[in-house]
Image (cartoon, rainbow, N blue to C red; front, side, top):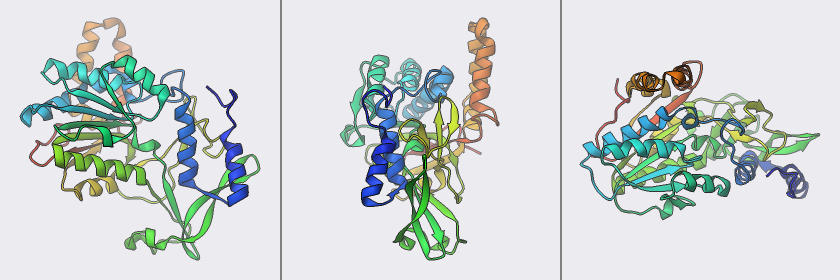
Length: 354
């Protein structure tokens, strides 16, 4: 469904709202834009707006399945056990991961946390036995949880604070001609900035993601209460930094995030440095945050690619190209990170050592 099919363009709704009540926060803008975007389409794959790692190759999901199985087996094979995926896309990753897990005796209850009805229909077709949840609160509170969040955190709305000559202010959005622009708000926001960062030069932007912080905090709490392990995989950084990372993708091309809200996927880089601290504040084990390419290599993606190519020589070039896209330095290998968490008493995980 596009906005031409009976829905008022979100840009018009924003213009009317801002005319009546003043500028809206960037967080509000991004949250509403992505809610509209995801509610109305399947954005994945060649015909969509972007391709995620599981859609590139089955190897990605298989290695995640092996990692989770290894953790569960070494922790004592406790039952019941739950596979919980946040933002599971088409269910491709889960299907590939669970197919491998089953070979080693791991057949968990499957839980998808998803808010898009368009994607829910596809997920339930891919994995008919899955239980669907609007958020984590309805996932069973007993038995270990094996949590996967691949390219989930990057789409959660960010809040941006900017240092002005008058102190810190929230970045707000208002219309200017055909597009929207950011302006500094009027409310003092100094209290929201960590003390160590308050003296930054004028013009400095600090980006935070309350939704990502809440998700990691909640997952860490589940690991403490129920046992288990979690993988958060996304593009982002593992050292704190300043500046805006907001971007928009439509039809596999970067576009202006301030034109046509609701018609493109808005994302921001994930601040893994802060998320690791949040997880550890709950007493959970932070296994590390490492580049995706290194993690997949340590898990054996090169040997897996070789084995697949031997079984299907006609697809050898495509398999090799998919492997390179996942681990290549100029592709997803370095920009994408993998953060591992585990319950106290659970083992360390493959791929996070050294």
